[in-house]
Amino acid sequence: MNKLFGVLMFGLSGVVGAATDAHSILKDSDQARGGGLPGIVWEIKVVSRDGERTDDQQRLIVKAVDDSSVAETQEPARFKGSKILQVERNMWLTRPGLSKPIPISPRQRMSGQASNGDIAATNYAGDYDAQTSGTESIDGESCYVLDLAAKHKRATYDKIRYWVSVKRVVGLKAEFYSVSGKLLKTARFEYNNTIEHDGRRVPFVSKMTIRDALIDAETTMEFGTVKVKKIAASEFDLGQMQ
Image 1 (tube, rainbow, N blue to C red):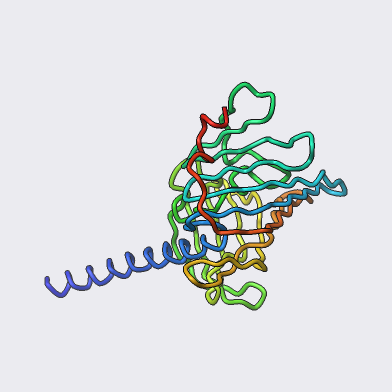
Image 2 (cartoon, rainbow, N blue to C red):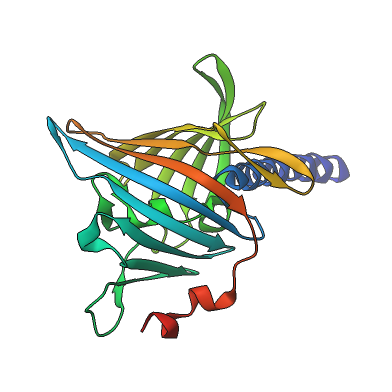
């Protein structure tokens, strides 16, 4: 009996350990896309292509800390001053001329293949449960393969398969799925930016390319002028947006 109990406990500890490792990998990888930092500001340039047609370039300034972020449109001129505010799991849109902010979903498309939730700081560790499913190579780089399941309906995607570099602990590739398991989009990431954090230089995302799984359409998001800095709480005050 004692022997059987010991075997069961050993097996249970292995499962718990695997879950903890997956969560730790995910949490560490979030940092390279804005998660878990004391505050961060960056610029995003968004270009979308649908077949042969290319949309106008958009430029946004994003400020984020913890589970809060605000993205303000700088270009094109007709959308200048529009803002998307995220506080925990809630999102609102406001623009000059609107009497009050409009509640929106992180899953709504912001531009082309990019959803509203894609422009906010990444908090995959807070929004998804993670499990490891082995390792694979992406462009010759060994990666952990993580299967992510949304903890709540306000997560940007229902399921994600995520490839995280073993050496650099940054996400290199993602596949986004519906709750039924249908592949919706794929994404690839580049990390040519660096930031200063805790006295060390760490990589930060420079480019995210999102492709539709069914049609010839893609959206490229380029990240620049990245700075780690404290953000005033008033920046995320819904009342200020009104």
